[in-house]
Image (cartoon, rainbow, N blue to C red; front, side, top):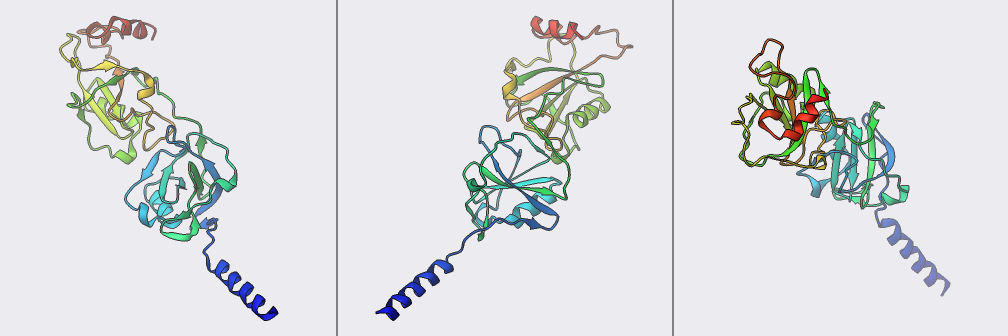
Length: 268
């Protein structure tokens, strides 16, 4: 009887041990784990979602993708999602036990949890925390507004700024170098330029100023800056040079748009 019970316990123990218990990968190449970090679909802690490999997701696959994109932070969530970033946009404190889900591509590894990231840092590189902020002035450019400008877009995209290199400064410098005096950024990665005159003919009838919340997408190359939103464009106004007498002052744009905008520009 004793032998029977011993054998049963032994078999049960073997079955338990045979089950894969996922553990956190603490180090991979130059990446190091910095714990479990909360996340929210409404305000992501890391701004760049890696797509295309969710069914085979592993810690190594995710971090290699983040490294290839030039990011210094990587995180895995829900067992199959991979996010990258250069700033921790929102800090959600959660217990380490919230990151308990195995990776879809390797059940021995932990890949976060529901709204929780196994977070990694590359080569101990410093990073900033906090949400992206609006750039209100840059050189001789002024922020104008967040506008709803759905397709067809009246501004042509500016090349050859790569999406992964997009910042507010690169967009505005590129538009200025091309001789344009209006610019917009959309979806964190696309820069648009145009040359606008003050006769009102350049204003598309379908454009409407919208709330700033619609323009909250971080720039892909600088997550601390806002580069528009999905199908929204964050516009900047270019200042007119001193030698340009056809259009005077900083309220030139308001003369062909809404009078309320004139108040903003008169405060410059």
